[in-house]
Image 1 (cartoon, rainbow, N blue to C red):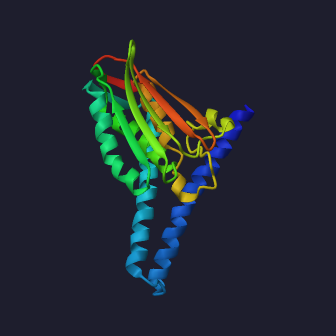
Image 2 (image 1 turned 120 degrees about the vertical axis):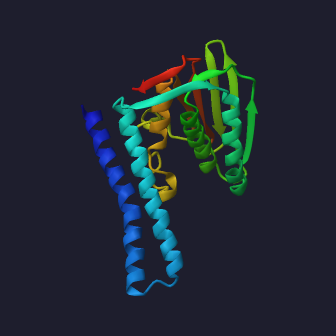
Image 3 (image 1 turned 180 degrees about the vertical axis):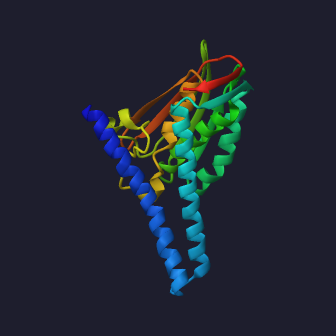
Length: 234
């Protein structure tokens, strides 16, 4: 009971913080434009636009997550070539890695075709690879690897980033739970990993994490072959 109450308190504190930060920026910059005190109105308007987008993205992700956890979401499973999805997502994020001075290495072994929702798997991979790049300092490395297993396929995303304290690992898939509350707005909204977990579970799979502070983190997703068709996300 105490753990549940603490999780609820953390949830409310985090959602309040993540809404308050962009809304404060929107209010401040819009007031400056109206008062005529903004040094660069165009830049102020751009900041307002970006922060409004951030709030909108958070609302969409939270709505998706609530629907997933309520079993009101559906996966549209079709045969997909997972290594192609991995290659496409990695290629798109390679630009981000290069800009941050992070080396991104992708190894995709031939995999059996699996029945899955390709768009949702893109969401999973974008989050895991994007986070790995985001929390890896310049000069670090991120590796993405796929493997065929006797009972399915695995995707691992490994980095040499900041790592996660051992005490925090059991809670990283909770809604709005953020490992490092001192990271500021760049740390994300604490929804991505919760959504990743729900999508993977909906496919009948599992996601695990192994991490060491200041050494790096590895997320591993296992997916079964599955069966074709639409299934409720529960």
